[in-house]
Image 1 (tube, protein in one colour):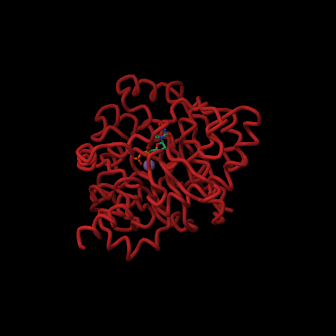
Image 2 (cartoon, protein in one colour):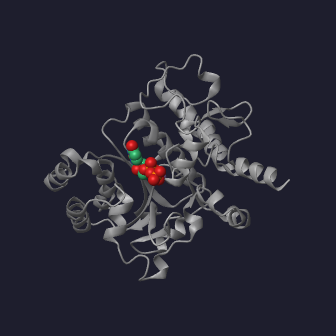
Image 3 (tube, protein in one colour):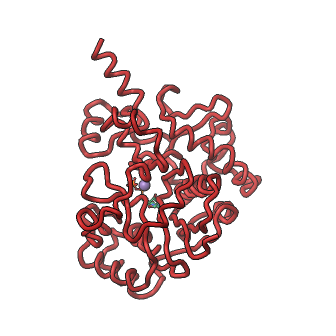
Length: 331
Ligand code: UDP
Ligand code: MN
């Protein structure tokens, strides 16, 4: 057991906490020998914390607003970078010598411990601009010095995309050109977006994926699931329109995470996401949308979102849907 190496994820609220639970469970299922750490915001519900406690080795509450003067002052200058700053916090985990950060909206499909052979900063290309790395999965070395530098850098320069990915790409700005061993293969961060941007490649290589990343506005937990039929759907979505990865996420959630959540919540109602429960389960998570935002749009709106890089790759713009459309054109 490599006690000084860890997978690290982040959840500032209960919605992302569900993602972290599924991610942590998927790492356990593939028998990682590394430690599992989750950084959580102070507002994550106690029930969610206790489930996270059962999956992760370490649950660290982080709040950049009272985590030392530098972070606080930097945040006062750039309040727009709030969640981004929280992610940078992973560099403070100096009890570990090397870590792999993974977004809470990622899911592991095999053992990926070999990532620890890589150096800081290793990451996979972003599908939208492959000379930038995607910050959903990256190898790093915790260091207070790097953390301070990152804070200063981001408060002075901001982020060109408003998030952590912009900051990190500007800071580790030789990633694209300097050392090819820091380019992780795309299969370590397969954004579902790539399914339709290069469909033949997905058909050829998709089965080799080791990590899938549900990048974009609509997250797996925004859908609902019927455990009886194994169907995932948005409220206005026909049952056949979903991706296999999304079903995988829900299966893992329903079988391995939901039972623990039920125990933790007891009589207190909470948003399970499963259709059998919607009649009597209360909505305690105020941030959970009742209708996923991307599911009811005109084709004009959809085109605009697609062009803005916000395609609904699990719904209207999903693999099966696009395939059907192509088929109808070809006929
Ligand atoms: N995150 C969080 N709370 C938020 C937004 C983001 O905890 O309100 C964390 C979470 O780990 C998430 C990561 O920051 O996976 C990056 O955000 P997201 O995955 O939504 O961005 P995307 O990958 O879609 O660009
Ligand atoms: Mn993500």
